[in-house]
Length: 153
Image 1: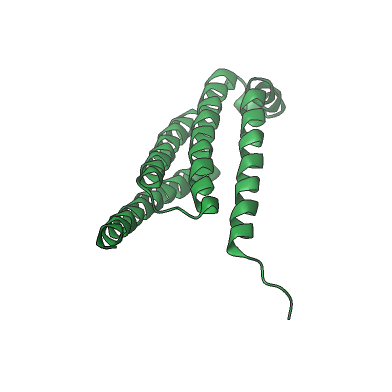
Image 2 (image 1 turned 60 degrees about the horizontal axis):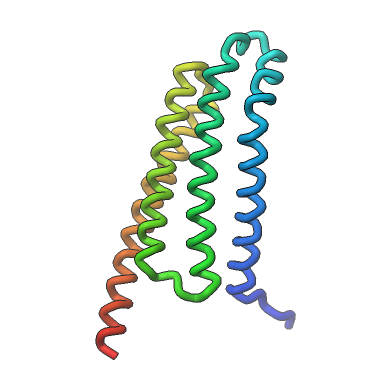
C-alpha cells in the first residue's frame, strides 16, 4: 500500500496555506482604496458609496489579518506538538472576538448596501464566532486535564 500522509505534514501544509492567505489579506486590504472606486464605477447602483465601502472593507481586512495572525500562532503550537496550552485558549477567544467584529462590520455594510450575500456572510461569521467560543472552551478543558495529569506524574 502507499505511504500515508502524516498528521504533522498536514499541519505544516495548513500552516503554509495560512501564511499565504495572510500575505493575500495584506495585499487585498492595501488594494481596497483603488479597487472599490474602480468597481463602483462599473456598477451604477454603487456610485457614491466609495468612501463608506472602502472604510468598511479595509476594517474587515484588518480584522481578518488579526484573526489570521493569531491562527498562525495556534498552528505553530500544533506543528510543535504542544497544542493544549492556555495561549491557544486565549488565541481562540481572540479569533472568536474577531468574528464578532466581522459580524458587526458586515452589518454596517448591510446598511450601506444590502444584498443576500452579505446576510449570508453575517450568518456564517456569527456561526464561526460561536464555534470558536465552543472550541476555546474545549481547549480550556483539555488544558485543565493536561495540567492535572502533569501534576499527577
